[in-house]
Amino acid sequence: MTATTIRSELRFILNGQDVRLTDVAPDLTLLDWLRLSRSLKGTKEGCAEGDCGACTVLVGRLSPSNGLVYESVNACIRFLGSLDGCHVVTVEHLAGGDDRLHPVQQAMVDFHGSQCGFCTPGFVMSLYGLWMQTPNPTDQQIETALQGNLCRCTGYEPILRAARSISSYGGTQNDPLLVERETMIARLKALGDGARVEIGGERQRLIVPASLDDFASVLEASPTATVVAGSTDVGLWVTKHMRDITPVVFIAGLRELKSVTVADGVVSIGAGVTYSEAIATLSQHIPELGPLIARIGGQQVRNMGTIGGNIANGSPIGDTPPALIALGASLTLRKGTIRRTIPLQDFFIAYGKQDRQPGEFVEAVHIPIPAAGENFAVYKVTKRRDEDITATLGAFRLALAADGTVAAIRIAYGGMAATPKRALAVENALLGQPWNEKTVEAAMAKYAEDYAPLSDMRATAEYRALAARNLLLRFYLETTSSAAPAQVSRYEAA
Image (cartoon, rainbow, N blue to C red; front, side):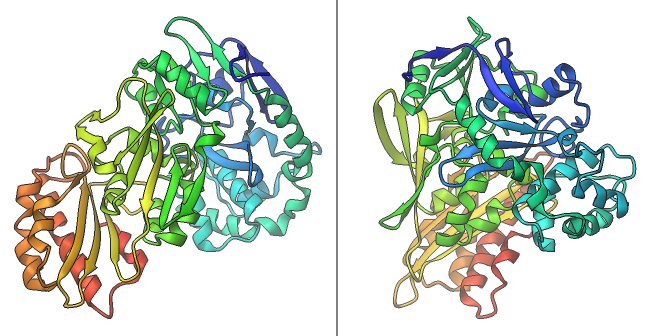
């Protein structure tokens, strides 16, 4: 079987059944298919944008390093075309053959974790995903797993009590997904025939490339196609904006885009690496990025969304670009067999416009690790702490000379301009000057030369301008005070 072989059939496993589909719309969501085609009504639509978690299911996929990995995802914005070779698990699959409730479900019942019940299946699936990986989680791990699940009835405390008690109802060793793990791995491997999936014709076309080279060939031939990795943004184009996104190329399964390497002081991340996959390595080598990633959406969004997609979309409020620009990151772009590497800051040209040629795609991002003695910080300002979109985000990287003057400084912001953008006038005002409060206060006046922010539902222009200036002052205070706040406090909502 060669990479150019074409299969006109989507193959995956739903709960315990093999699914083979030859008629799949490119913009069909997993949620709609489950409810309308399979009558699996436990998966709910609450927000249709990946915020409330009522649609949460688990998706299992083969991983070269971790075997079979199950992750919670938002079915409302996950497209069916992205599931080739995966195992989809819904809440209906939890109950045993003897009609006994699953330990997660029984704990929710006994601790009164459900009232109206609408959100309950989503909570159950998120807790199930956590319990399989961490049978006895800490409160922090529970809260992280539930960041993407909203409940308007119980006040959460009964749900937290249920989460703490799941293992008292039974161990993971008896869980069907663990008992059947090796069998499921074999079944999923049998689905992987190395072929490209192509369904539909003309514009109503769905493509799942067989390999990275195949993807490059497909996109070069169809440069106007919508490329979908995690669909955390593209999903909303369909569910909220009713946009026509066809034809669609799904790349979430391309293992060549899943690499994370560290060499010569640089972390290189493939464009298909999700936030969840990147957080451990980034936290180890650039600790300040860990808390930032932990505030991007909920766990479901982090399991789907990719750093490469966050960059490629070019959003002025994307969370990772300002931090990566401040770190001096570079970007590898590919078209066909030709690659080029550019500074990340040069990729963003104007609102909705990036330095990407037709048929070219983001292949990897390369992030320098700050040197010993350098200071780096990221501050995200939002209306609420968890699962909220940025009002403004500032990132700072500072190197001081032996005499205490600023030897190097990079400052970048999101939410302040039409693109993620460096504060060059502010940087120039600081460079070569003593790193003291007088210098910083003088540099704060230069923000007006760098940014003219807009007012919107998240913040007024005046608030953004004031917050941006104060973040520089905060950075100064934290780099000079022996009693600087703990790292996590840098990410609290304003």
